[in-house]
Length: 115
Length: 113
Image (cartoon, rainbow over all chains, first blue to last red; front, side, top):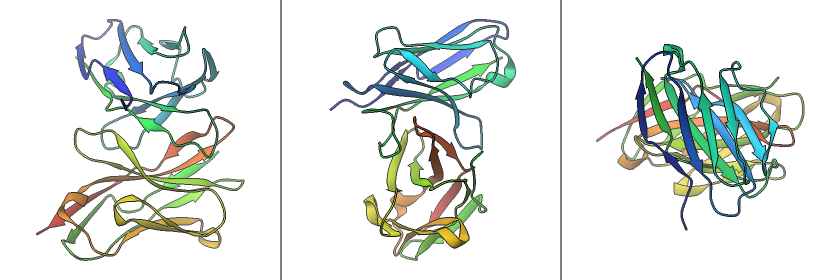
């Protein structure tokens, strides 16, 4: 079946602009995660959703970052007033439900470059 | 808070030789441990996971990992490396009800012919 998809695959923007990154999870997966991977580092947790609600947003770096999942499927990560330090690969993952025994399936990521 | 350390940033190994990647974790409770592989242009793929029970875990692509609580380690091994194993490998610990993952910095594996 189809895996996790993310669009766009690459996004180039200018400092100060607003961007939206989209994630389509595996159909039927109730848990959805966002991670950020800076160059040469491992992914870092940003936020996770159980259904439509953000169950844990402790990883969001500041209030310029926001994510939604209005219908419990597709999620959008929104970044306002982008800064050069936001340049990274943004990874989305989904799992059938949250829980320590559930595998998280990752998408290919969106590479964001802020000029 | 949990943390994961992968001491080796790069490892070069000859094709057919054995491979061992080190992972040390810090977590206050029973750890849930994972190894993921990331090939260029590909998403992270789960190799194996440990929750409880047998401390030697078998995964895909011929990989295995051994959980050692006394050493806070979860090292990944493969007896004979293939050129297609060249990739970056990440160890992670899962925590909380939502299983948010904390990753190590990764180890990049290069395979010599």
